Length: 277
Image (cartoon, rainbow, N blue to C red):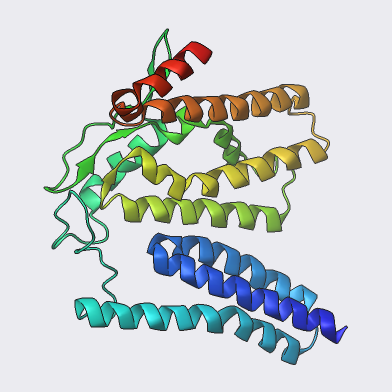
């Protein structure tokens, strides 16, 4: 009905506005917008028949975000004298970012290694898991290198994205392959950009979902197909155990953080958690 179509257009415009505002608050969210927009455009081609309907929905998707982009560019120009300056050189930080580019190739490879495979430190007492300093590498002056645990170490369920290299094994449909690869590529692009700033645990929240979502999709797809090459019970157990392990590890790591702030400033709370766990 016309009412339902107008409702969809309104929801699309609202989603576009919120995504535009998210990018304005944190420009790295542009990769999440690219992922969502691609999925939306693909669905639009099959869901809407007439060209006029497609045009209305497309405008609802583009215009609110475009308006946010114009306002952000105007703000950049009025404050920094540049339409494209996103505050990279002027944001409050311990680093001197003046003159640093968005991407510097010399540290990208090792930064990626830190974000994927840097191990954690294990202890026999609370909190049992702690972050460790990122992998050493020759970084340009002004690049931060802090404590980090690689995604394969604190969220091993993402290993299911390996199915993308053997799509015939699970009879993966072309659409699922495209969704997963788009998500993985967006995650890698996020890592590429943030590697110019440094290696630190808090940045993992920027790209973890880009790898976990396709891993989860591939796992659930593996349960829906008949395949003699995989042991579904083992995979079920592994995915459940690795996901629970990831939740537990990340919670315990958060009690310590980078420099033991909770224990240092709130010893009573830390002691109570230690007795409880």
